[in-house]
Image (tube, rainbow, N blue to C red; front, side):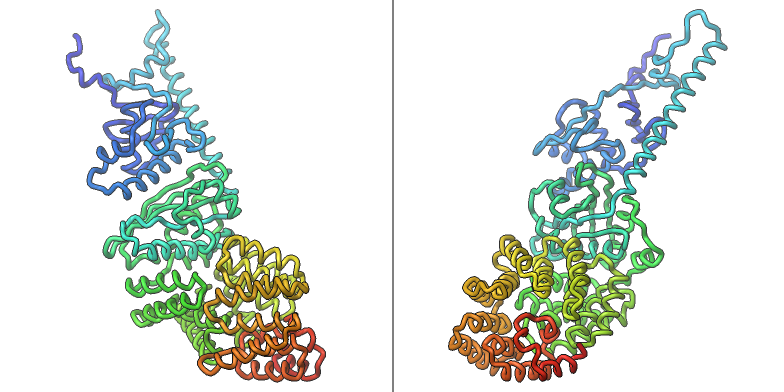
Length: 629
C-alpha cells in the first residue's frame, strides 16, 4: 500500500559529521549522546540548518527569533549564542568547519548536511548505511544490524572519550586571564559607570583565586570601545584567556552575558548568561568567577571557595555610589579623588555596614595625603579608621587589609604595615595595588630587590596602568639605577603624555644623571599637570637649586610659603630644596618639621637620593633613628 502522508516523509533529523539535531524536539546529539544547549543557540542553529551554505544575516535572525528585542541587545546575545554553539560543536571562529562568520553581515552553515527520515520508528539512514546481503536469512540480517550498531556504539565511545580528553588536557594549561570592560547595552551612556564597576567587581572576585593571574581593571579599561583583535589583546596583556561580555541594567534587575575566548587561537571556550536581582549582584560576581575558574580548571582552595560563595546582600543605592567612587578614584587625580571621596561617603551613609565603601574612603585619604592635597594629620587618621572599619565588617577582605597596610605605612607603623600587606596578599593575591604599595614600602625600608620583585609582579597584573608603571620606575630610582628609571618614565609618557607622575619620575631621574635642563623641563611639566600639588612644585625648586639657580630656587620656597598660608604644604619638599642648595642646617630643620607633621614622603628619608648630601650629618642620623629606620 503506497504512502499518502507526505508530511510523514519530511526529515525531522539533520546530520552533520558526528552531530545530529532533532528539528521537532530541538535535541542536539553528538555520536548519539545528547548535548545540553540553551534555547537561543538551538534556535540559531535550526535557522542556519534550514538554508545550509547560504548567508543568514543578523537582521534575519533577529526578526525570526527575537522580534521584540532591540538591535544592540540582540547583537550581543547572538555573539554569546554563537560562542556557545562553537563550544558545543568543537568549532572555531578562526578556522571554522561548521559555522562561518561573515563580517558585518551574518553567518553561514558550511558543514556537509544529510537529512534523515523516520519510517516506522526506524532511521532510513541506518538502513542505507548497511543493507543486508542478498539471499541472506533473517538471522544473518539481525547479525549484520548488530554489527552496524556495535560499530556505531564503539565510534561514539571513542569520539566522546577523545573529546573529553582533549577538553580536559587543554583546560589545564590556563593560568592567566583578562576581563575586558563589559559593554553597556542599556542605551544610556550615564550607565557606563555601572558597566565599568561590574567589570572591576568581577576582576576583584577572580583576583581572590591564587592559582590565577588576573589583569587589573586599569589595564583592561584601555580596550574599552575599541576593535582591537582578541589575539593582540592577549599579546599586549600577556594572558592566555580573555573574558568578554556585556551588562544590561533595567530597574532593579541586571543581566550579564559572558564568554571565554582563548587569546592565541580566538577559540570560544564557554559562554553563559546571568539574570539576577540587583541586590544579589555580589553573589552574581562570585558565581561568574567560580564558573570561569571551573571552565579553565583553575585550582580554588576551600578558603577561596568560601569567599566567593558567601557575599553579603548589598544596598543597591550604596553599591551604585561605590561604583561611581571607584570610577573617579581610578583617575588618580586630585579632583578625581575628591569626587571619589564624596561618593564613598555617600555609599557609607546609605549602608553603614558596607565594607568596600570604607576601603575606598581609606584609599582616597591615603592618596590625597601622598600627593600633598591634604595634610597627613587630617587625612591619615581618617584613612586608618576607615580601613579598620572595612576589616571589622569583612575580616576576609583583601582590599580592606591592603588599605589598612597603606595607611599604617604612611603613618610610620612599619611592622604593623608589613603584617597587613602580607595578610592582604594572602587574601587577594592578584590585587595589583597591594603588590605595588608593598613594593613602595620595601623600597623605603631599603629592601630594593624584594621591592623590585613586587613592583614587577604588579606590572604583570596591570601592565597598562600608568601609576603602576610609574611606581616600577620609582623602584629603579631608589636603587640608583637611573637609566632604567628614565626608560620606564619615557615609556609612560609615550603612552600617556598627560600623566603628571610620569614626568615627575623622568625629571627626578634626569636630575640624578646630571641632565639639569631636561630635569627642569620635565618637573615643570609635572607641576603643571598635577592640578596644583605643592609637592610637585617643590621638585622644580630642587632641580633649579641643583642647577645653581639659587635665586629661582629660593623663589619657589617663597611661593610654597604663600601657598602654606591657605592650604597644606609638606615641609619635606622644602627640606629637599635646601639640601640641593647645600644648606644642610635648613634642610635638617625642615626635615624635623616634616617629621612633626607626619609628612608621608618622610618614609623615603632613608633612600631619597636628594638627601645624600646630608646623610652623614649627626642630626640627620638622629632623625632616622627616631623614625625607627
